[in-house]
Amino acid sequence: MIPKIRKYPDPVLSQPGEPVTEFNAELRKLVADMFETTYASQGVGLAAPQVGVSKRLTVIDLSMGKEPKDKLVLINPEIISAEGRLYEEEGCLSFPDITEKVVRSAKVRIRAQDAHGKWFEMDGEDLLSRCFQHEIDHVDGMLFIFRMSALKRDLALRKIRKLQKEGTW
Ligand SMILES: [Zn+2]
Image (cartoon, rainbow, N blue to C red; front, top):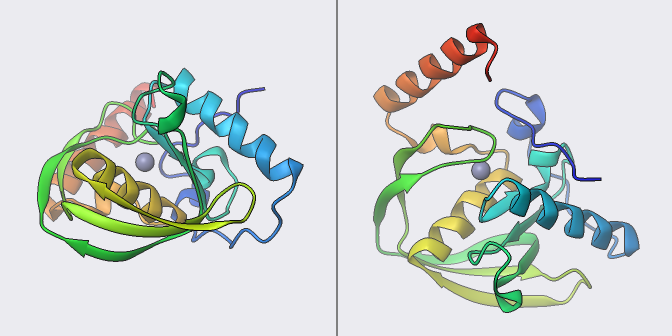
């Protein structure tokens, strides 16, 4: 079954995830389900809190299911270095139809565990860098609207309230 994506302001989205300590079949099932949800929503990344699981786990696939080597599983991920600056449109599956420019680092190096618990480091530039930062924010309970300017965040929140009232959020 494909897990449903939690939308803002579901409280699980603002809660820092618990570290993953067990690398078992249950975890790998969750990872597989998260990829399915990501593809079904035509996204490039998804974090566990977005499917209601408060854990430090995220999946990324910039190819959207076309390139098996692009499938990334980041467990207990952290950014270990960052440089440069990007200011590009960003969206989030927990905020359907909201896109806005957000400041991010142009290049980051991350450290994470794979689905078997093995630690690795990886560099990301441009879109992959943004994706790393967006998803690692999620496992920290940080949402992209709080990276926007106050003015843009107010506009986004106003749009959400309007959609909620119309019953389309
Ligand atoms: Zn997101």
